Length: 276
Image 1 (spheres, rainbow, N blue to C red):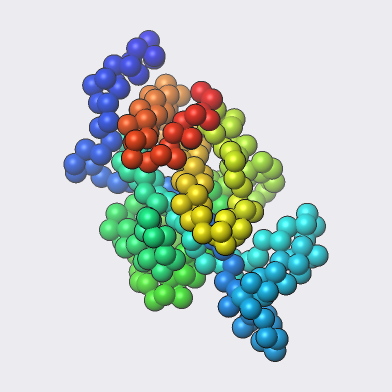
Image 2: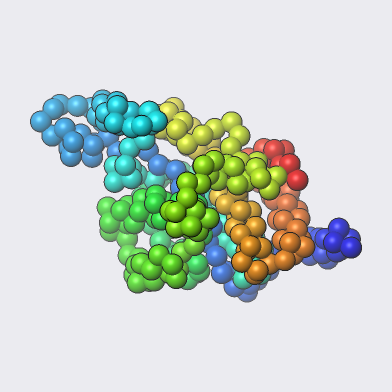
């Protein structure tokens, strides 16, 4: 019964998610960033004459030495965004659009400016995975850097439990009470979605130095799509969706992505790694 309902729904509304006038209720967000070598040099090593690259390398060495697991990832305060992908979602949980901001230029200031313009325009609830710990501080500090207004966001986002932001990592870890080992990759693969494929976040800086901005943004888009599907499953947990309704939404989303594969080549890679 469910499968026939899904088929009928897709035939009747093959790609209907972008219907004019549909209200946007959620903005699913993911970002990628690189260290700001000039800032690191000025703040951490003001008495040394270091190039931005040398300052980053030195800071990463110090981070590895101080880390329990050997991570050289630098704090968000030293980062600038080089990718921000947003999945716009309607009140009925259907995908309306998938956007990598400022494509194909991917300029940091424009990414930040367009993100905050979109937040003000849609007035939708933000949905992230660890956005409270990284993505939103990254974009908020970038708004500070570039002088972007985000009035409504700052007014509505400072309540951890009932604000205008759903951090799925925060929510699924009982607000930090348990260690959510495996993270988004594990949660996506648990429900048959691609999760991590060829790239991981620790390669973003190297890719940026090689001028491979599109690949960074494709990777960001994959994480954003995974976040969308994890979000749908959490709405089953909260009772906002039934499992049958979630299956219908997932089938509709896959059909929508298939229709976009021609204009968004990376989408095909995502679909090829889908294990339903």
